[in-house]
Amino acid sequence: MSSKNIRWLYVQLNELVEKGVIDDATSKQLSEHYDMDSVVADKSISIMTVILSAIGGLLVGGGVILIFAHNWENIGRPMRAVLAFLPLLLSQILCSMALLPKPRSQAWKETAAVLMFCTVPACIALIGQTYHVSDDTEAFLMWWFVLLLPIVYLLRPHLTAVLMVVLATVLGCFYQSPYWLCLVALIPYYLLGRQQGESMRHSQFSWALCLSLAIILPVSLLYQGSEPPIILMLISGALALYLYGGNFEPKQGFGKRPFTNIGAITAAVCGLILSFKDAWSELLRTEYSDFPYFGVNWHSAALAWILFAAFLILVFITIKRSNYRLLPLSSLVGLIAIAFVLPYSSESALAFAIAVNLLMVGVGIWYAMLGLKQHSTSLLNFGLLLVMAILIMRFFDQDLSFIGRGIVFIVMGSIFIGINIWHGRRRLV
Amino acid sequence: MIKYILAAVIAAQIAIPGAMMQRYEATLQDGSLYKFKVVPIDPADPFKGRYVRLNFEISNWEMKYQSDDTLKRKDKVYATLNIGDDGFARIDKLHKSAPKDREYLKVRVQYVYGYNEENTPINYSIALPFNRYYAQENKAPEIERKVRRLNGIDGESSTATVDVRVLNGLGVIEQLYIDGKAIEEYFD
Image (cartoon, rainbow over all chains, first blue to last red):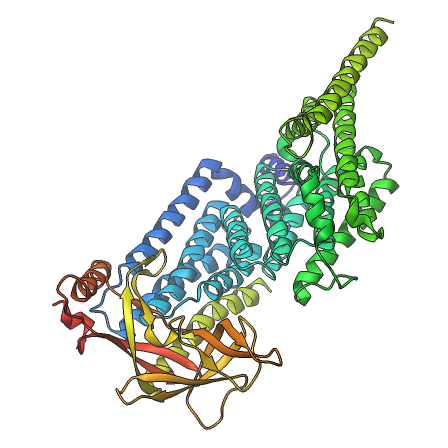
């Protein structure tokens, strides 16, 4: 039962008992069955209280870290040990009290969790400081994430969950593979939120997760090199985000569709980069010997193949659900796959660049038309932006001759005007 | 159920930092003592505060070490230590597996220098696993300034050294000295 219904029932129960329809015992049983106390406690605390207490917890925790960082030299090692563990113990007690014997309000959980988010690293950092431990930032961040992860699932604290995404992003950016696994570890949290229906908290977390994926995936893949298989997997990953969003996110509302939006933008950026001839010559010149691609280590290879598999599965789902409008952008993967298997493709960089240009312009126009048809400004703008981006890039492309560019621009302009006249006449008829 | 999971999480949150601490503490208590010559510089870490970064003379980029095994960049290797005539520690050789009868440090290969006729690398440089000395906020920059001045304008050169305890591949800094005085006393 949704929390809204439970609150309705809570009010009703009081009335029913007053009118003598049900007795106290039944009312109590029902109240326990639906866990009304925690639901009502949740509501009685406003969202502002939750936010303020979470920020308060973060500030206090940050303060603890800063005070420790002063490094008091007169304090001996045993006292430092006590100092390291004391705030951690306090936050552990608070977290336990947030759950046991009965779950408390969201504000309590947020504060306790965010305090723990600060005291765990403070503890490890103080130990590092005491023993002059060097260059252990990777291990430090990793343990911070691992020791906090269960708390995200136990307390379901919103701010801490978003902070964990940030932490995973930092790990992934600076230390690459296998830290994409940190994001994977947060995906069940996203799914749990999804299951409970739309809420502001869920969409905030989804945006954070999705932005993080859009940063971590390219970083984790590209640090291995930029051979065609990696680029193929990279674009597959971007399109997997887009297809997932298109199939499973609500149809309306920009803010509610992080996967669709970020996926489309990421894939479009990849497409724009590949619209340069230089990008293709570079790509096709790179020697790659191992296909099927196994990567520099198992986890990098696993990431690449998971992305590719996810893309294929999502294409299958898209076709099965007849969501064909999601597919045109996906043809980028097909184009790279062709370049990848075709013998002698290394000499035809220009041909592939032209193909990508045509494809992107085609996809752009197609999105713009779809936007017009569905009265969707965001679709229309996305389509127009794609076309404009390609045009601007070609206008400044030093690789093409002035005459060549001139002719292409005139032809394109004529087509645009033609379509407009045709569209205008059709509307008159 | 939640009770047990929570208990396990709390136990892990205490046990893991506790285990880290125990390893460092055991090294300080039971490790063998080595002296290293260093060149201090001062940066800061947002979580652990200000520290004096130590450049070890023996891990300088010019220093090339040899190994009986073929090593790659970023490999984790074991460096055996010995003590030179001046009383300071030196790295003797790099090994792929932990030597049984000698004191060693776990280090990482930074660069590979030169190859022989069979295209196997000859020399390697390494990064020592302890290059930070955490000092009180206001003292770390002072340490650095002092050392720089002593080395520069006055023409005198001060020697900075650290005592490091080594046990089972782990090295923990015990004390930083400037001209033979513990750093905390030097500035009092």
